[in-house]
Length: 165
Image 1: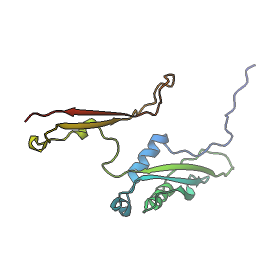
Image 2: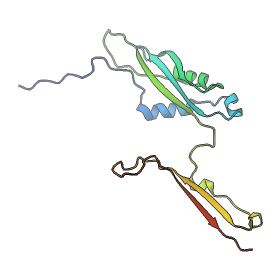
Image 3: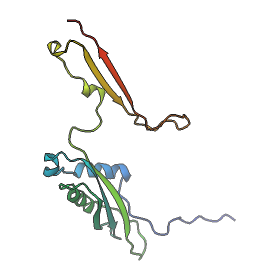
Image 4: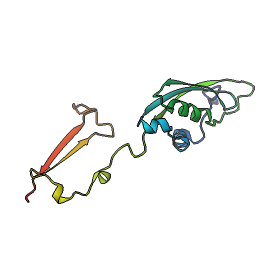
């Protein structure tokens, strides 16, 4: 006779519909960069701890580590408005605590692709010794750990092109 398996979790935790990618997209869409942070060119990460009640509402939220200049308040506003779905538990009412990290990046900053780094250069503006390009390459994917090299290494390439006038 085969036993029927029971569900592992007796009480299911609340979840954001669509998972982590939907949560990140919601935060990105709802984020309004504070004026003070824009003026002072502040970037960084705000960590918020929050509590979700049995109805799926955020009832408590506080900043664990912040960057100030209005970013902390904006992160709290976003977290307090997050809608969570809560599975049925019968008559059990419970609360769940979670953490969320919200990244504030200035518009236009971020990873620079090689296409956006190409600029037109006036030939008359080039110094007599030539043109020098400098690229810094940092791996974005995890490197193979079986290789004995440092996995967090970055590489710098300098290229000098002599110009004849």
